[in-house]
Image (cartoon, rainbow, N blue to C red):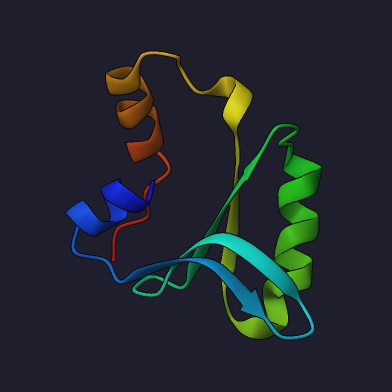
Length: 86
């Protein structure tokens, strides 16, 4: 996901600690979206994450890694579906 976001010229950082909230996997500074990679992703997990991060003004997208294809090119295409353009 980091590579894809950079490909679209987004400012991106990883493993960012947001004080009193937590550490996020990938933070897209351009769109203020956090991408969290989980092995047990669910709509409930995404809703809870958005509630936790809401005071910071960011949105959270939870990606279940078990749903990603094994093929690297297919994985790239699937991850692009999660991209929120600026």
